[in-house]
Image (cartoon, rainbow, N blue to C red; front, side, top):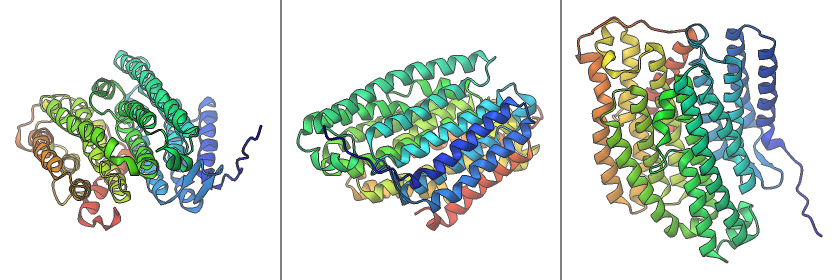
Length: 458
C-alpha cells in the first residue's frame, strides 16, 4: 500500500512549540509553590514573548496541514493579546478570591495554543484536535473556583453541551471525508463538487457543531449561565477568544474550500445571523446582572460577525477578523471594569462616577464602543462588516442589523446612565491592582485610537 509521506518541516508552528514549553514550565513552577504574583507576571511575560515568533516564522508546516500566513498572524496576535489581558485580570484574585491560580494560568495558555493551531489548520482532523484542545481547557477553566457551586454547575453544563456539539461536528467531518476521501483543504477544493449533496450535508453538520462554540442561536442556551457562573476573568476569556479562533478558522474553511458553493451555505448563515442578532439583543434588554447582559450581548455580536461571512469573499473574511480584534479589546475591557468594581448588579452602579471617575470613564468608552457609537473602534468594526454585507447584496439584512444596534443602545447606555445620572446608594470599594489598571489602560486606548485611526485595523 502506498502511504503518502508528509514533509516534516515545522517552522510555522515554532511559536506554538515554544508556548507549550513555557506552559509546562508554569505547571512545574506551580507545583513548587512559588509566589503566585511572580507566577502571574512570568506567565504574562511568556505570552508576550511569543508575539515576535509569530511574525518571524511564517510559512507552512507538515505539508499543507498548518499555514502561518498573514491571516493566521493577525488572528494569533489577537489571541495572545486577549489572553494576556485576561491574565492581567487575575491579579485582584490573588488576595480576594479563592481560585486555583497556577492551573488557571496554565489552562489559559493551553487554550491559547489550541486556538493558535486552530487558526493555522488547513486540514479537518488537525482542525478538530486543535478545537478540542481549546474547548477542554475552557471547560476546566470555568470550574477553577472549585468551592463555588455556581462555577461547578456552569462547568458541568458547558462540558455536557460541548460534548454533544463535538459529536455533531465530528459526524459532519465524517460526511465531508466520505464525499471527498480527504480532509485536506487543498484537495477538498477540487473534489467537493463530485458529491456535492453529501459534502454540503457534512458542512451543515460541521457548522451546527461550531455554532455551539460561538453561542449562535439556537445553541446559545449555555452562554448566560456559564458566563455568570465562571470567575469574571475566565468569562472575559471564553466570551471573546474562542469566538476569534472559531470565526477565523471557519471563515478560512468556507472561503478557501467552499467559496464556489457559497449560494448554498450563505442562505444557512443568513438565517443564523438574523435569528442570533434578534434573540441576542432582545434577551439582553431585561437583564439586571451585568455578566448575563454581556453574555447576551456577545451572542448578538456573534450574529453581526456571521453577517460578515455571508458574501464569502476574502475581504469579508478580513472584515470579520478586524471586528473580532476590536471586540476582544472592548469586551475584555468591560469585564475588567466588572472585576475592579466587584459588583455584578447593574442597580449598584449608581453614581459610581462620583467616587471612581476613571473607572467610570473606562466603562463609558466600552459601552459606547460595544454599541457602535463613533468615534470608538466598535463603530469602525461594524461599518466594515456592514459594508461587506451591502457589497454582497444583503442590504436588507444590514438594515435589520442597524435597527437592532439601536435596540442594543438601550441596555448598553443604561449602564452609563446608572453610573452618571443616578444618585449613589453606597460608596463602592474597588478591587484593583497595577496589572488590572495596565490592562484597562490598553483596552481604553485601543477602543479610542482604533476608532480615530482605523487604518490600523485593515
